[in-house]
Image 1 (cartoon, rainbow, N blue to C red):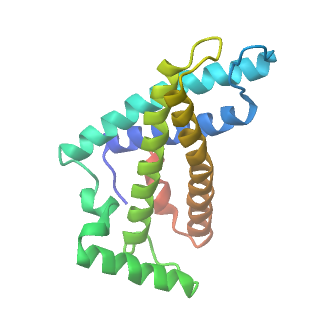
Image 2 (image 1 turned 45 degrees about the vertical axis):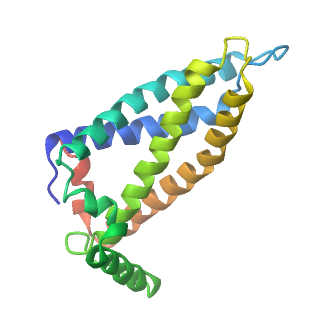
Image 3 (image 1 turned 45 degrees about the horizontal axis):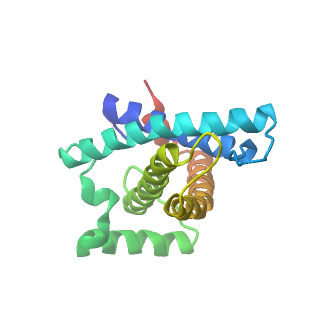
Amino acid sequence: MKYGRFTRILHTLIASGILLELLSSLVMRTPRSGRVLTPLQSFGYEAHAWVGMAVFVVLVLHWLVFAAGHAHKGMGHFFPWFSRARLDAVVSEARELLRLKVGDPEQNDSLAGAFEGLGLLVASILAITGVVLFFGIAESGAMSRATRAVREFHEFWGPAMWTYLCIHAGAAMVHLGLGHGSILSVFRW
């Protein structure tokens, strides 16, 4: 698989940022009135907030690249839901996968593209709600009712990103185990 340098940089930044966000979410605690945070909880919260802002900026850049028509294989590759031919290709690959047949990613990447698109949507939801929380939560932890609702929505999508990451990494391991080393080309500099 061949990816442009800019695509490889964006993918690496988004993947690294999301991994840092998920890891920091394991140790962080949101400040609240009367709650004493450990240094690790406080650091985790601050790291989560600032790395989240960086991921948001990179995701905005990624969406701008998409909007400018520079998506690898076109935006329809990542969001095939509005094209009968693309959707048929995704369904066909999904059926093969259910039969435990994993195709060569050089030839069969419709399902992978659709899955990447879903991951991009989940990451974007988390980033946008994270920005609202960044500006909506006071240092003391005080927040409005609307900000609290956004926080609950943000927390709802966190497990979806964990699930996405596990499936994505697991699929990469399966492909590597089958000798499909070309999937790592997105990380080649």
